Figure 1 (cartoon, rainbow, N blue to C red):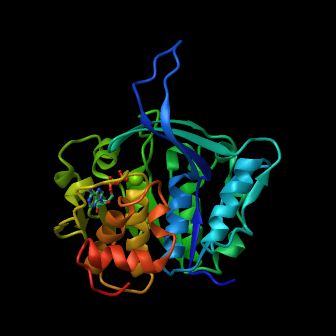
Figure 2 (cartoon, protein in one colour; figure 1 turned 90 degrees about the horizontal axis):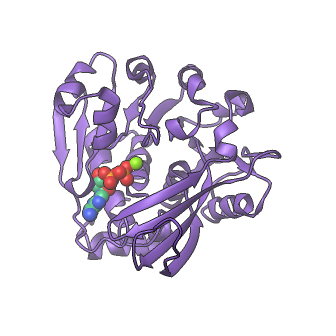
Length: 315
Ligand SMILES: Nc1ncnc2c1ncn2[C@@H]1O[C@H](COP(=O)(O)OP(=O)(O)O)[C@@H](O)[C@H]1O
Ligand SMILES: [Mg+2]
């Protein structure tokens, strides 16, 4: 197997509706002028884009035995992600998110399907050893595996892997997660600012960072068009964004950011370099539709990086 990173997480297709004339109203029909079916889910977008920018990736997760499942797997394969470890669930459908896009913001409805029952016992823990890094995303969308996430991270660490973690949003907004128990196993924690404040139960995110310093390793906080913050246990470092003022959509910006960070992290580069590159990859993601649209080929990624964002560093 030819991969450095194993991604464990949810898989679904995204049905994107754009140029919608109005807001949905119960009992009425409204029209959208554009439609696209693309690979969705934070974990899959991360895996696909990380592979596209040159780090080998294998995916562990679950889809149903249906067209959306085949579609999701084909999309991953198209970007050379190893899909041989994906579990085909005979009982549940593949997850699907319907996305209603309104400018930079969006409303989403998700059917979880197979991602909901995917569990620790479906994971080939021996196969973890084939990689050097594990990334786990979307804790709250995967209740079947959530209780075993500490065990999963511990197993990965014992197998010599580094671990990164992005909880993503909790649709129930309960934020029931033992952050202090999990963070010691996490080398890179990658929430966005809103998620971090919800997880810590405080708007004073800078204070919360310092309160976690005995438990955490690297924490990177994503802050949309304000860039990102890196916390190494001692100081908070702000990295300015490669600002895109003509955002096509912000789907997958955070997942692309994560991919940029981990691409450099597995090469052993200093956290500040990982952060800068993460900002670049996040920004590039906002230049095309959907989570993976901007990463269809490396030539255009390089072109956008240098032409639009004046980035002429390494990839
Ligand atoms: N308009 C933008 N211009 C440049 N970079 C952006 C823009 N929006 C987002 N990004 C980059 O993408 C990263 C992730 O976006 P963010 O929206 O914070 O994450 P999430 O998708 O997880 O909510 C940001 O930290 C930033 O680096
Ligand atoms: Mg995110």
